[in-house]
Amino acid sequence: MELEQFSTALKTISERVTQLKDSITTEEATKTSLIMPFFQILGYDVFNPLEFSPEFIADVGIKKGEKVDYAILKDKEPLILIEAKSVAEKLHKHDSQLFRYFGTTSAKIGILTNGDEYRFYTDLDEPNKMDRSPFFSFFVTELKDGQTTEIFKFHKENFDLVDISKAASDLKYLGYIKEFLTTQLNDPSEEFVKFIIAKIYDGVKRKEVIDKFTPVVKRGFKQFIAEQVNSKLTAALNSSVTSTANEEEEDKKSEFDETKIVTTEEEIEAFATTKLILKDTIDLNRIFYRDNRSYFNIIIDDNIRKWILRLYINHSRKYIILNDDAKTEIEIFAVTDIFNYKEQITPITEKFL
Image (tube, rainbow, N blue to C red; front, side, top):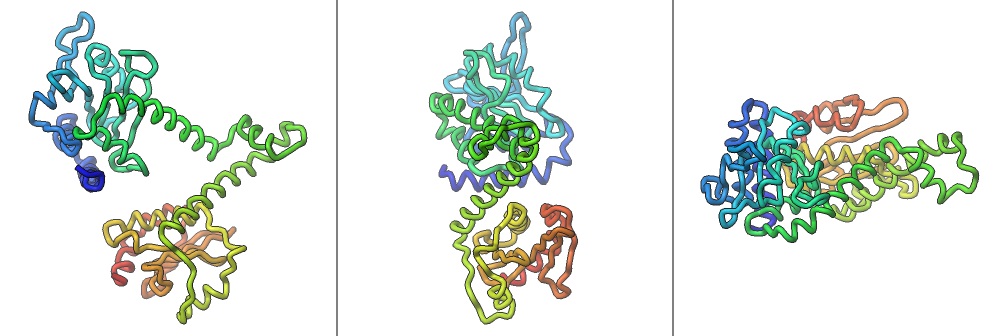
């Protein structure tokens, strides 16, 4: 299977989980409705007990007959142990059961899942003893960039234990790095602020100096990320400001001054939110944005006449205007509130198809 085909199949599973998870209340229903279909797209014959063994015996010490929910086998030996929970349950309290099974078999990968969240474990810290934290985790319904490629490595056709073991350490510590940076982005620590200002400020780093620079570091961090995202999106979408005879474009031209326009993190988030809303309505490559000093345009086919909505952000309020007949104005508190207006935004988009 090619990665593109796998990505399509994984999207189907994601939609299935989204559709069913609120109506599933038991572990058995989770297994048959969500977990087994997931491993099917990974290329395993879930109805062949010589390959995908249910209730696999993993005796623990003097306790006999202990069973893990599934084991993926090769030459009758377990490669991967899978412990399943109901999709209605959180996983943070259930890794101890998989931990007990891990050391009693030859398996080097353990997976804990509730059909939506998947946590992958191995023995990086101590041989034959499962690590307390996963080296890779994801939600099927909230896949992030790059995760599909990592999941594809576990496809039956691609599975290579040596390669995965080598990559596990990188994945684990990459996760820690991203978690650390996310924390510093939202609430920079005193040590982090000291590290930053040591490169740019020659004075004594007293407490009041650190307190003064903390919001500056936080704002600078976010602006840097927004600018990087903006740059990459612009290149990927080939979005450029062009002139037309359209009245709206004339207004755009009169306001446009490249040196004064900064596309913010919130505006990029609004763009991404709108694309997510419309992923089943239109080819996402047809959705563009145009920024100016007064408002942020989200448009179809890079054509200002085909605008879907405009986002306005100022000191006193935040709102959007929809390109419906009434030019409806809607006040919002966060740009993610745009999700709440999918039913209004979708038909506006459809009229441009």
